[in-house]
Amino acid sequence: MKPLLTEIRHNPLLWLLVFVPIVFVAHSVWPEAQTILFLLSILAIVPLAALLSHATESVAAKTGDTVGGLLNATLGNLTELVIALAALRAGQYMLVKASIAGAIVTNTLFMLGASFLLGGLKHHVQEFNRSTARLQAGLLFLATVALLIPSAVSEADSAAARFTQELSVGLSVLLIITYGLGLLFSLKTHKDFFGSAEHGEGDEKPWPIGVALATLAGVTVLVALVSEVFVESVQGAALALGMTPAFVGFVVVALVGAAAEMASAFSGARKNRLDLSVGIALGSASQIALFVAPVLVLLSYVLGPEPMTLQLWPGAIVMMIVAAMTASLVATTGRSAWFVGVLLIMVYATFAMTLYLLPPRS
Image (cartoon, rainbow, N blue to C red):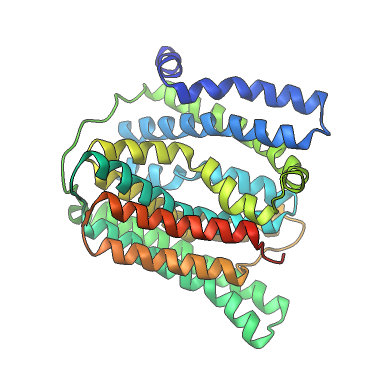
């Protein structure tokens, strides 16, 4: 318990944990104050996501490279998954789909772009392993194609709802298989291809395994409880703040859920460990597309009021395709400078502004 308390004392981001009990008290006393509950739940999820990330890394550090890499890959987006599951149970499918598309675009453009910018301001030119970036960009492009098909077929052929549901289930299975084979390729059969291109400053000392596991379990429960409050309040708060659930999912949920990963990616870039930053950004985006999205489709048959499909609105598809193509272009260079980061951030800002001013039809 001492390492956990020490981390909380020295990490200003974790001081926001004070908002966790405040959320629960406010929810019981003022359940109708949806805007306040929405803002408080965001402030509570951010430090919980940071703790979840640190606990996952500590467990992974104790289990060896292969198991540790698998654990990091599997639990890396647990915050986004828990929030999406809460929305799934509530039947808010627009919020779920927007959070999926938003997480992919945010990680690919904003997280990667900000890492390039922050690292480039300190280091003139930085390098990263092109093999890792190309693999993640290729997986992301494959997943984007799979997510495009249900929407394209539905728009072009006026396909029946049952056909779209069956197609979504089949594609979900294919994506999960591809995700597993990608892990096997990068962590087992060809892991020698994926070393770092440079050596930066060392990692922080991991927590003891007992503390890490206890933190992982406890924080997951708290994230689930806070996510329930977040999902309950999102509709009322969105109307009060002039936002739609689509914008909230695409921008707010994506940024909040990835806050801890962004902190790690930005820190790695500043320490000239750009492989870490690229791996977190593109790896997280491809994991959302290949694992989280299809898992949510399959779980909707159990948890949701009705089955969910992979069909997205056209604007989200365009944004995801642009993000995947941008990742492919960046991956071929193996080098970056601060202005490359500016370009990526401007593309993301264009998407966010467009979605805010012209929200899609649900």
